Length: 109
Ligand code: 2BA
Ligand code: 2BA
Image 1 (tube, rainbow, N blue to C red):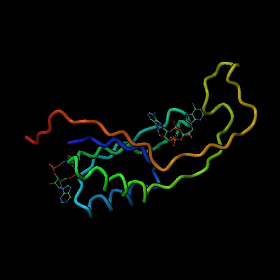
Image 2: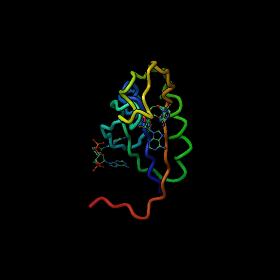
Image 3: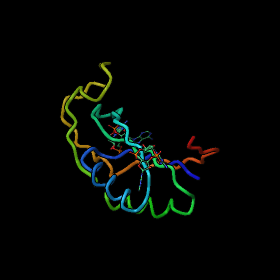
């Protein structure tokens, strides 16, 4: 079994959860915050059998859209003058950042 940890954009979360449910996956949704943009995003925990990881990755890929976003100066960096940003910078927030972790044990008690 694997635990798939997927960081996605809030806008895609409900649609992806619906699709996962339709395909018989269980998931847990966590409200999270991106360390760079300091804006809300969504982290999904999805425990899944090894042979379904590939299909799951495809569903995540199809549903999660990449978007461009302007970073407001000072909103996303440390307060040190070395990091001082004077112009808005465009960053591409990816569709999904996904970690697949081996699960040692899984139980519902
Ligand atoms: P349980 O299987 O006892 O799951 C309770 C909660 O535990 C789930 O809440 C989910 O947050 C988490 N969870 C369970 N299995 C997980 C997994 N493999 N990976 C990540 N998180 C997991 P809900 O998703 O709201 O589900 C509530 C109950 O609805 C579930 O109880 C199960 O009986 C049923 N269910 C969940 N997904 C289903 C699906 N795709 N089709 C049919 N029934 C589903
Ligand atoms: P944020 O940390 O808010 O990052 C949003 C976007 O800003 C990133 O998109 C990337 O394009 C850019 N970015 C992030 N850190 C940067 C840096 N130090 N310098 C320049 N640009 C930077 P994504 O890479 O698609 O990441 C989207 C979200 O996924 C991230 O939100 C974060 O919450 C999560 N994430 C991405 N990589 C991660 C990792 N290695 N570990 C944990 N979480 C990660």
